[in-house]
Amino acid sequence: MEGYRIRGLQVGDGAALAAAYRRNRAHLAPWDPSRQESFYTDEVQEREVERNVALAEEGRSYTYPFWRGDQVVGRIVLSNVVRGPLQSGTIGYWVDREHQGRGLARAGVEHVVVAATAMGLHRLEAGTMLDNAASQAVLRRCGFREYGTAERILFIRGEWRDHLLFQRVLHDDPPGNPGR
Ligand SMILES: CC(C)(COP(=O)(O)OP(=O)(O)OC[C@H]1O[C@@H](n2cnc3c(N)ncnc32)[C@H](O)[C@@H]1OP(=O)(O)O)[C@@H](O)C(=O)NCCC(=O)NCCS
Image (tube, rainbow, N blue to C red; front, side, top):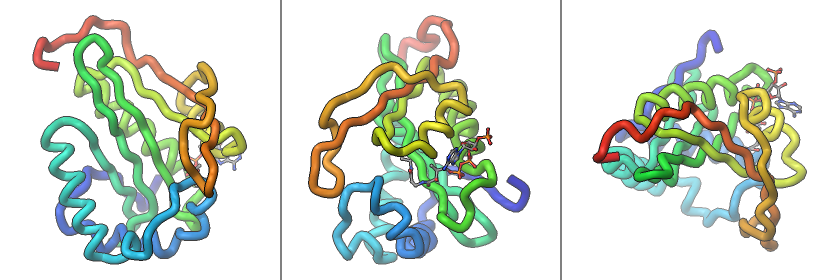
């Protein structure tokens, strides 16, 4: 992780994210929903950043880009944050094709584990396509346990695809804060 930085999304990050998505279009295509051309523009990414910064302020979803200098080289999202008796969130991530194999995904997951624990969440979940061995290896390495398959849950490359489901329970304390 030397030379890399993970931090919360900030207004103004859109252009660096758009450049990363343009560089990684083919790399991410097997695992991502299909995108409109406008998705790869600085303007649309900056609008997405503003939307996601607002979601973080509302406590619903948190995006953390990975940086190498002023270049975005991946990102992890903690989304679907649910409070009450569930105290749960979902993670999703990708790493720039040129920066894979250096522990970035693992560092991103651990960063979110620490943040989610501090927020009082109890559990994180993640889903991978059945043939995404790399992502499954990341999750297992980070202490996630496979708990089932969701059939035809996600529309990717023209078909409803199955997902392997993973979770990691962070602690067994009761929900700490009545506001949560
Ligand atoms: C999956 C992905 C995020 C992995 O990122 P990464 O930064 O290369 O992963 P890391 O270097 O942190 O690897 C973490 C662990 O997973 C293992 N791993 C990573 N890629 C692997 C692969 N292709 N095959 C087997 N194991 C793999 C590593 O060996 C490492 O374990 P170790 O610490 O015991 O050596 C990256 O390949 C990617 O962005 N893929 C395309 C998008 C994607 O699939 N996103 C996830 C959708 S669910």
